[in-house]
Length: 297
Image (cartoon, rainbow, N blue to C red; front, side):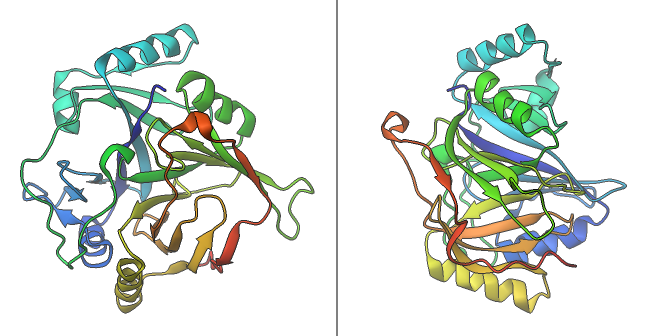
């Protein structure tokens, strides 16, 4: 597979300070020493950063950094994208250094969601220490989590990730709601070569912020509960109560970020070492229990 994991996301905000408070005091990420009033870098592990928050004129998700396992794989997928007529902008050495990777290229999926395709595992060289005592985030070869991106061209977007970026099917579902289309709205969950159940998912939902949600994983249910307590104490909007998903078995809750998209904060996500042994599923019930949604605020 061309992509191994989710390396990072970039976000634009009008209020870097609000993101710093949310990132450190609620999520438990650590701001890097070189963060400024105009740019916040949040660490979750031994990488230099996983969230990059950039001051701008809007609250907006900008892009996902999808990581290839090697330069050879990265070059091969860029050639494949070129041959398919996808507009790809190869970044120079300065852009790669700015992203703390060895190579970077920028492109968009058919729905306009921006992607930075990268290679090269750059390490920070100093230990990650959470300012609120989160013992660790579950990352490594799985990357930091997953992203769920919106699309108005579901089939084309799904084919793009599968046929051009090499993702595989993990699960698909149709989401039904009062007044919605009879066939429901599609959601497709796709895995990279790493063991995480899904690294990218696409959904037929509008997302004014540019992202439906991203996910971070911690080792235990206690770490999830403590994060929920911190979010409630900070007055953060809880988009979904605690629950357990049917497809990836993640126990999680969802909270609203300062830029308007949600973070799923969870534990216990399903992992797969050998994807050739897995049959993709079709989920007809989204959750085993819980996850009561409140999309307001």
